Amino acid sequence: MDYLPHTLEDIEKALRTVGVRDVEDLFSDIPKALSNPEINLPSGMDEDSLLRHLKELQNQNRTDQPCFLGGGIRHHFLPSVTQQLASKPEFLTAYTAYQPEVSQGLLQATFEYQTMMSELTGLPISNASMYDGAPATAEAALLAARATNRSKVLVSRGIHPETLEVLKTYLTPLKISLEVFELDGLTSSIPIVDKDTACVIAQNPNFLGYLESVPNLVEASHKMGALYVAVSDPVALGILKPPGSQGADIVTGDGQTLGNPVIFGGPSFGFLLVSERLVRQMPGRVVGETVDTEGQRGFVLTLQAREQHIRRGKAKSNICSNHQLTALMATINLAALGPQGLQEIAEQSVLAAHELADKLSRVGITVRQESTFFNEFLIETETSPLKLRQEFSLRGISAGIPVPQTFNFGNASILAATELTTKEDIDALLKAITEIELSK
Image 1 (cartoon, rainbow, N blue to C red):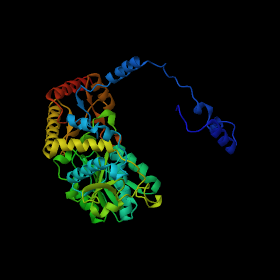
Image 2 (image 1 turned 90 degrees about the vertical axis):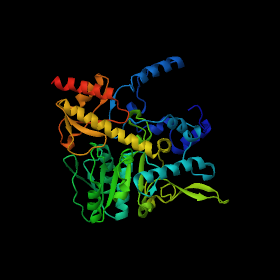
Image 3 (image 1 turned 180 degrees about the vertical axis):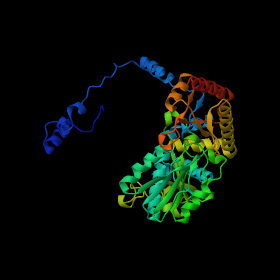
Image 4 (image 1 turned 30 degrees about the vertical axis):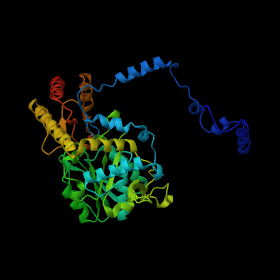
């Protein structure tokens, strides 16, 4: 930094007080190889050269080629108005709306976000968003443990593997047991729920793309007094029955598909909604509607159960922020699309995925279609998943999410299609995968 608020006299006085000669002595416990390592950095550039260099790096990222990537992050249509409005400086520079008298615009936008997510999921209360889908689900598990005073969480193998890892990170230090119940084919088996189970967590559509039997999972949970946490794809909710209306107590998920570009997998935002009886356990921010002293409609932060507002020991979570801007993009996007637009995107994604699956089957690729899928599905190949993805890339196609070996499917990959998938894209993939598999 060019400016520090401490004078040389201030620094010398502080050093004398702690009994060291200079600032470097404060870091003497750190090995010299780590405290000041040699870094092989290129020479500085003038502005024009730097811009040219950055452009060259940018051009390595191809966004104009067929894309069949899924596994939680997908390409969907974004109206121009989404990015344009979200780029307004009033939103770009906004932080926490602690002062409602100067934050009404941001608070209203957040309130609209909460309302839209409530309508989409079928649960009455949403927070202002979370960091992304994985910690939102982990927070849901902690919420369930608090609400039920139980110490075991059951999670389906069909949940995203990265979400499973985050659950382990959150729950293990708190001595909350995490048990995985396996798939029965391509969808979740019905878990054995006992009196120690705080919640059952399942994703729909699951990581492989297939639709779960939500009512059966809800019934198994509630029968033993456990909560049901539904991890949901928000675009799929454009045509699927809302999980809240099927009995889910908590709904979480990742909102990237609602209005965020892919951008190397992030940033995105997570969403978390609860039934009314769980509102006092919900982490994060909540915006509420009220009236001012003149009776005019206004908005404020309410039910603030974060550690910044109450004693740390009584806080429901230590989450101290949220992905406000990316959640705002989803709000603008949903407002631009409307219910009909979201439904059409979901329907067209289903049609494109099923057309792709059918055509792959016709050329001899093993496509797992024994369960209903939304817009992602499983293929099994002679080529290993990583090699398959590399071969696709060499042919100018982004495709193939490797399925971890914990699923016990062998050489299996996930393909996705959306409303942006064209006939030409499908033809290119068919040609490429035929070449790759026939070369075996």
